[in-house]
Amino acid sequence: MDLDEFARTSAPDRDGDEFRKENNRLLGVPLDGTVTVKAGSMVAYTGDVTFTGRSSAEGGVKGFLKEAVSGEGTPVMEAEGSGYLYVAEQSKKVRILDLDPGESISVSGTDVLAFESSVDYEINTISSVSEAAAGGLTNVYLTGPGQVAISTHGDPVVLEPPVFTDPDATVAWSSGLSPSVSINKTFEFGQTSGESIQMEFTGAEGFVVVQPHEE
Image 1 (cartoon, helix red, strand yellow):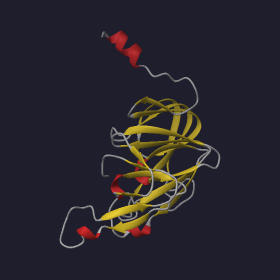
Image 2 (cartoon, rainbow, N blue to C red; image 1 turned 30 degrees about the vertical axis):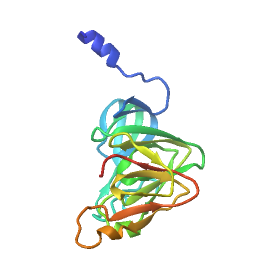
Image 3 (spheres, rainbow, N blue to C red; image 1 turned 135 degrees about the vertical axis):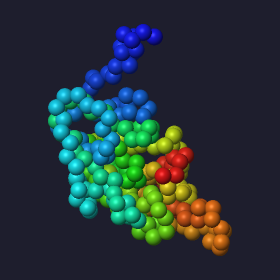
Image 4 (cartoon, one colour; image 1 turned 90 degrees about the vertical axis):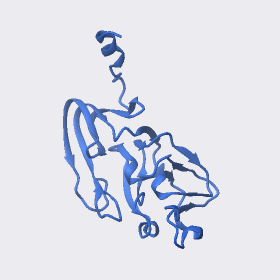
């Protein structure tokens, strides 16, 4: 195609005021106020937008998404102003979730890409897993109303409990589930498969989201 056709067919449609996928790996955010996004995820914006990092170490709506083992974190930043914001992370695929008032979901701290200012979040650490594994240990409890964008390596799969998952591949789970650590005895003695630590989800209902990749 020629340059004019390329520019025309590749231009984003900015109508509306909701999150939208510009493509499978790029999130578009119409901005008229504030939105919280993962620090470093901005790839472009139009209009008048300012970015403020949040360095609070624990909790709160403007907190820090901490990784329990390293003590380092995945910081979030607040984008404020009027314009259109584009965010992405390492070519991961984007999923947009619409949370009703009072509806909640737990998402791994490494997979939270953006959420609206109307969404509250609480940071939780699965301590039993934190003591044994190196990733996927901090989850963010997000409560609507509002939109949430998560990022995944590849296309995720949604499973129903009871199910065992690798902490490094676990993306999210429904609010009614509370995972616990499970040790696979087969791998305890002298073997190095890397699969000995597992998350166990039990319950009569709910769902667990896993991706085909270990963070």
